[in-house]
Length: 211
Image (cartoon, rainbow, N blue to C red):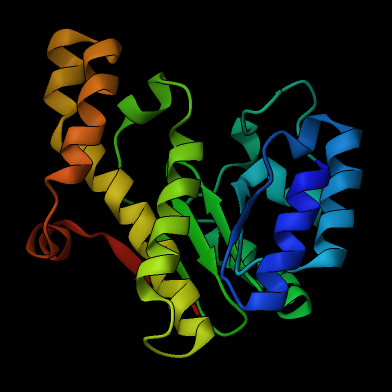
């Protein structure tokens, strides 16, 4: 916990982009207190979590007893996405950061724009850690786009691309999950991500702009 504060402070001082993943925020008062302390030291470029974790950060009620999982009643859907986007946009403007809610439908909200990404496979929920993988992909994408345009555009591009990479990769090996099971699917997911091309992403992306 101490090293994360040091790292966040160093990133702020040196202009290094970073992602904060709110893992387990909705089920731990310790983590809630710590996240607020960390955000006072340095605001990340992307604040990421599942919908329950982000609701907790914003002070909204969440389904109790879900651990690190998101409550089903709180999930982002095509019907409630715009409402969520408007709520999250106020926080994005306050923090000067982008909010990324991952799930069956991913929600990307900056101070100016909001998008949903509907790529993915139910198989991704059958293995542990896909949300964390999205976090790492977002960080890698931030490094890739850093400096090519405005900070807000960089953050939006990185968040959207991370969701597309994981979602499309999962779609492309859906048959492995169906025919062989979650273990083989998990093993093959990294390979599927590595085989993605700009052309594949452009052809398969399922993005809707909300704001």
